[in-house]
Image (cartoon, rainbow, N blue to C red; front, side):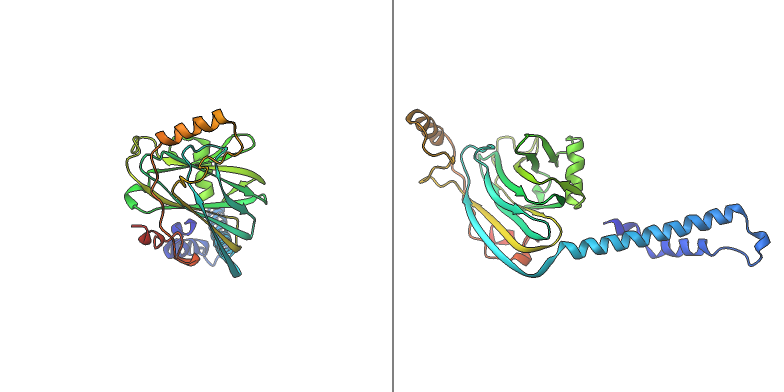
Length: 272
């Protein structure tokens, strides 16, 4: 946090510097005046930073009584922009959106979509069930209308990496619009997708009064797992063939923890 660099010794040193002048006005020098001004500016900056952090912390929590909602969705065999599963609508100081899913064996990518209803500073949080995999999850945020990459936690993603870090700090403004969230394994990690990864992702814009959870389970083999309906016989046959060639994804068990324990690690105790 920004406050980690603020210590009692720093404040003490700054204060002593500020008042380190002699009683005789004739002995004051321009150097002492400059040092005093600098120290005062530093104290003012520290005070403003503490006030800002306190204000942000107050805005990031629940606002009054929080309504909780949960829906289940199913993974698909082919993940792309067209088959992205909806995880909700993000509104400033109104909704919090949480996603709980997994990349099972053979499953290389998940794609979800959300709508940002209000332009505002947005925060993203994420967890994985296995701490050894904490750097193995790649999260990308795209604009669905333009396809532009907005944020990416990959170390080599350049400006998109910077935007992702800003998102984690609640310091990036997302414009009103539709976004896609692409979840995959980090480059070089388990390229054959042999390991299962359980994860959670959460979006907020300030405080929230309504808490929306999306819990994704495995592919529903008795339904249209691709999200397409009313297609021609040839297309359906092609999809059927692709389905037969794809591996099944293990389902997530029911999650019974309350909203207050989400993204704390308690969630994944029930998944182990």
